[in-house]
Length: 229
Image (cartoon, rainbow, N blue to C red; front, side, top):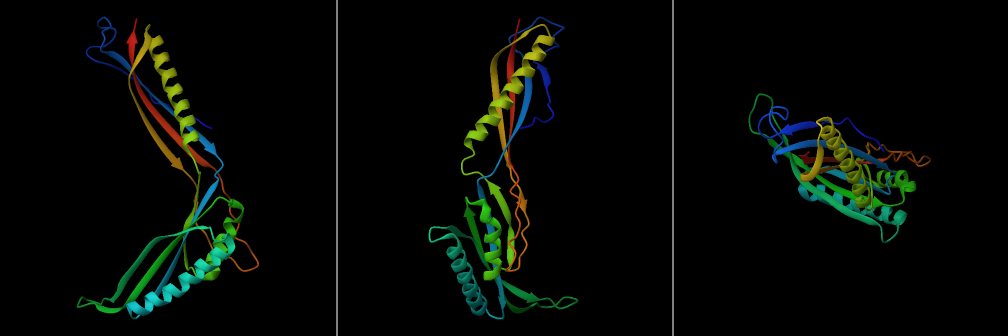
């Protein structure tokens, strides 16, 4: 758990605090930030099977055969209830562009089928990558770690950020010889940052090593609090 740099701004409606008596329009604005780091309990791997052929039918047929093999091997590894889904599918024409301009010539098609695998068993993440590659996937988009339920961690980060913002509002009010009163407004921001690692292929005798790292939940809170005597 860590705290980032703090930015606080004292704001007043109208003239400066020392130039006139305190009015109901005087307030203080404060900013709090907190990051809670936890171990992930979820991993997502995306494979792409990319094929090229002179005709759309051939490119599609080759892709279907290779994709079916990848799916079969992954299901064998993970079981019939594995969380596997198609993340994207595309077919694009390929053209040859003559030098110096001129009319491009259609030379074939590229078909790409992207499969997303989600697992809660992080110990086999490397094996999942190896299985997909050995079964015919020729691109690995990457590896993303996350949480099944990040709400408790989000709430914790927001509580810490809010407490930090309130403490700074209290300190600024005390420095002006006043007290902080009721909240005028409160705004939150949440960012979830997890490691996304490029994945590489492996030989049959080696399992790709994977370091899970941590998932960072970062909360920011900005508050406006009335100043009272």
